[in-house]
Structures are given as C-alpha cells and as structure tokens.
Amino acid sequence: MRILTGIKPTGSLHLGNYAGFVKSLLELQEKGHEIFLMIADLHALTDPTNIKKVKKIKENLVAEIVSLGIDPKKVAIFYQSEIYFHPYLAWILSCFTSLGDLYRMHHFKELTQNLKMKKEQVNAGALYYPVLQAADILLYNPDLVPVGEDQKQHLELTREIARNFNKKVKKIFKIPKEYLTQTAEIKSLTNPFKKMSKSDPDGCLGIFEPKNMIIQKIRKAVTDSEGKIYYNPTTKPGISNLILIYHLLIEKPLKEIENEFQNSSYKEFKDLIIEKFFEKFGSAREKKKEILLEVPQIVKLGKEIAFKVSCQLITEIEKII
Ligand code: TRP
Image 1 (cartoon, rainbow, N blue to C red):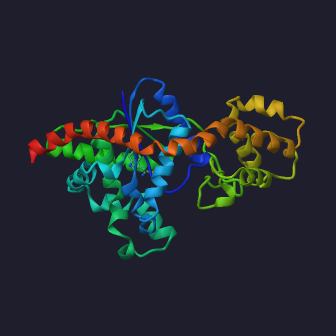
Image 2 (image 1 turned 180 degrees about the horizontal axis):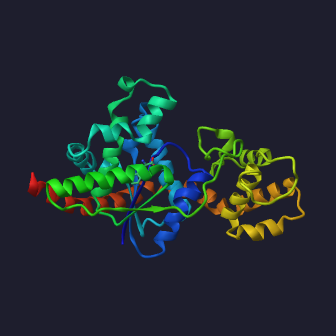
Image 3 (image 1 turned 120 degrees about the horizontal axis):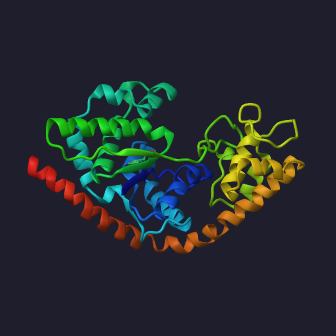
C-alpha cells in the first residue's frame, strides 16, 4: 500500500504530536508499506510570521522524527517546497475547487471567527491552503493518508476535488482514504478539556525540552481533590489525561493502570510518569544532536524518491494540457 502524510513545521514535537502522528507512522513503517512523509513547509508560510523561522524549525523537526524511530530507509522524508510540482498541481486543482468549499473549511473559519479577522484581511494562502494540501496528496496517488481528526475535512475536500477532476477531465486520481489514529487525544496539562498544543506552553510537554521543565510541568498538572486514581474523562479530566499519558508511555491497558495505582497518591503517580517519560524518550533525546547533522542527506534521499514518484502523475497531466 502507498501511504502519504504531512506535518506542518511550526515547532518542536510534543507529546500530543507523538500520540497523534509519530506513533501511527512508527507502526505503519513496520508493515512494509511505501511511505512518504512530507514536511509541509509551504503550508507553514500561511502564517507569515513563520517565514524566517521555518528553515530551522523544519531541520529540527526532521531530526526529532528520525530520533524517535522513523527510519529514512523505510519512509521518504522530504520538504514540500523542494518538489515544485506541489504548487503547480495545486494551481490546476484550484480550477476544480469552488470558493464556497474553501470558505467553509475550519482552517479558514478559525481565522475569521476565533481570531476575528475580516475575510478581506486573511491572506489568500490561508484560503488556498486546502488546495495545496489536495495537491500534496493527489500528486502521489496514495491509498491511505494518516491524519488527525482535525484534518478530516481537508481530506474530504481532497476527495471531492479528485472526483471532480476525474469526472470532468480524465480518471487519473485514486480516491484516497484517511487513516485515523487509534491513540486517544492527549490534552493540555493545565486545561484537560483542550487538546495539548504549543499555544499553551505550560500545558504542553515537549519531548525534547529541558528535563527540569518537563518535571515541573508534570508536577503542576491539573488534577482534582478526590485523591483517587481511576479513568473518567468527564468527572476527572486531569487524572484521566495523566492515565492516558502513562498508557502512551508504557502501553499497558487502562484497567491495569487503574489497578496498579489503586492505593497511590497523585504525587506518586506523577513521579512515575516522569520516570517513564525519560525511559521512553531518553534515547531519542540523546540522539537528536547527532541526527541533526544527517538531516541534509536524509531529505536529499527523500527528495529523490518523491521527485521520481511525483513525475509519473505530472507526466499524465502534461499529456492532457
Ligand atoms: N494540514 C496538515 C496539518 O496541519 C499538514 C499537511 C499538509 C498534510 N499537507 C498534507 C497532512 C498532506 C496530510 C497530507 O497537520
């Protein structure tokens, strides 16, 4: 099976990224699939404040992904901006996409509703974002696209655009399926009703951040006053989130974790989470610096593979137009 996924380089990886993204890739790479992992650096520019930072962030991101076990021999890791076919195909696909569809995408709505920007002020790239994403995907004709819940809408639009092109022009695109992560979403340590995100740094556990910060954040994580450890996300959101984190770290069933900590205090539980965190990520944290030096070769290899495969579809397109 052919698999393609992408990650937008906006910062260093945190535990939420690990649960929602890295973990499923680690599983998929062991199954002998053909896998493309694209660093969506062009998408990162839709927030123009990223433009000067993106180079460092994406190199760092590749080093982190590889330190965590993604094998560049099994997964073609490449920068979207290095394969010029992406924006080229996006242009063609934009002619098969309605503005109405783009205006109703969450990504755009978030800018206009949550950030209260006027429609006229949003940069055209932010509106066009899903078309570029459709091109990222369709260029490789993948069977599966691993994404988080928040990207489902973009994938639906991708299929819509592909069907539209196939119907009006020629059947050249495979209709890709999404592959949703099985792992439960990790919440913020300070507000367990919200997804863990780097926009809330105190609630966000960076996998590669300094040891004392991690210890401090886990110690301060929101709990409740009951003093008992069991899983119930509605009445005990903080503790339940910590149980999920522990589950992610040691891969034991939730029931077993509940039994294990029946008679423990929250402090004891948190101390063990800290210990397991460093057991799980210690070697990745150590390796990162060394792997950073290998990033140029890693993405060069990825680019060669991505170029070769994407050429096939572009040749088809060229024949048509
Ligand atoms: N928009 C995705 C995100 O923010 C990143 C992305 C860009 C992507 N192109 C993609 C994901 C193609 C999957 C496939 O997470």
